[in-house]
Amino acid sequence: MSATNASPALDARRYFEAVSGRDSVAEAPPVCLYLEVTNRCNLLCETCPRTFEALEPPADMSMELFRRIVDQVPNVARVVLHGVGEPMLVKHLPDMIRHLKQPGRGASGRGTHVLFNTNGTLLAPRKHREIIDTGLDELRVSLDAAEAGTFLKVRGKDMFDRIVRNVSAFTNLQAATGAAAPVVSLWLTGLKETVDQLPEFVRLAARIGVREVHLQRLVFDEQGFGMARPDSSLFEQTRAEEEAVIADAQAIGRALGVTLDASGATEPGLSLKRTADDKPWATCRRPWSLMYFTAHGRALPCCIAPFSARGYENYTLGDATQQTLRDIWNSPAYQGFRTALLSDAPPKPCQGCGLRWSL
Ligand SMILES: C[S@@+](CC[C@H](N)C(=O)[O-])C[C@H]1O[C@@H](n2cnc3c(N)ncnc32)[C@H](O)[C@@H]1O
Ligand code: SF4
Ligand code: SF4
Image 1 (tube, helix red, strand yellow):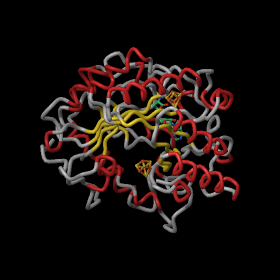
Image 2 (cartoon, protein in one colour; image 1 turned 90 degrees about the vertical axis):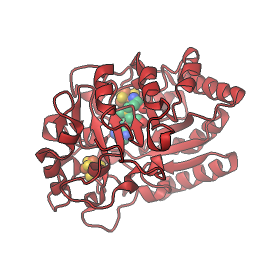
Image 3 (spheres, helix red, strand yellow; image 1 turned 180 degrees about the vertical axis):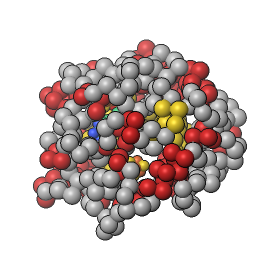
Image 4 (cartoon, protein in one colour; image 1 turned 30 degrees about the vertical axis):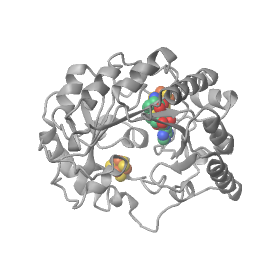
């Protein structure tokens, strides 16, 4: 694709702001890639579709496919190295990060902004130095609980203490060596069952040297699965005491130097409220700003779709093993998806966006 796809002034965390016009044809190449480096996992989270069905046959993305994809967008601003699966299971993950961070790549030659979410179980101290040395920008640890009992209930295995030890050792090494990157954050998926953990979660973050906490919006499909179902969702049904818990956690964060925000909004409370718009999916800019590839090279519209609709064949937009990214990006399938997204009859995965959860 064109080598002029990322503006040097672009904040990699607000990559979607690069999108101006939205039509069936995307004028500019994607500024962000989501690469599912594996679909394998060692946890059984109650909120994750992977726990309930095999989405594709188990696989890691090969280094060859990874290079084939990323080398077609050398100036991409942001690369997210996870999909549905645990990225730290992949032996060549450090090679992937190094490939993206090599000098001369990316906007203004500083390299692409690279991050991934991890369940933290494999963040063993012997790997810490190597991870820091890859140049990774962000390391997001999905912990979902402030103590072991709730962790077991939500994430399916008794590994809370190990993860907390791992993260603590990582931030200790960073402090001891003055390594500012990667920025480490803790993530808690917003569930009615666990939102009361938030104040203690913020305290835990402060204790283990983490300065960012994020409340992740819960995404689920029409039928729901595990704990990802309408009655567990905080969206549009936060009770006064739950809102008070969030406000309390923010106040604790301010006192301890920990920021608390929500995916999609700086204010956690705001991300849980419906906007006045009667077709909120139509504000989405993802099909103009990012591409998502599974471990097998299947192109999907975004990272929300695997959680919001079943059956990848219903929203597959291309195949990176057979087509170039340029061909996929403005293929009839992609153009049709964009046209539908802007209409009153959005594609299946988009139908609940902004309605069952916020964008
Ligand atoms: C699918 S995981 C893949 C990366 C890694 N295995 C992990 O757990 O961080 C990506 C993110 O989705 C979150 N997640 C799991 N179930 C979710 C749901 N139903 N809605 C929103 N996010 C969810 C996880 O907590 C994690 O932060
Ligand atoms: S959320 Fe992450 S750790 Fe949990 S089952 Fe899904 S991929 Fe695995
Ligand atoms: S599922 Fe949601 S986030 Fe994904 S393209 Fe559709 S509207 Fe956008």
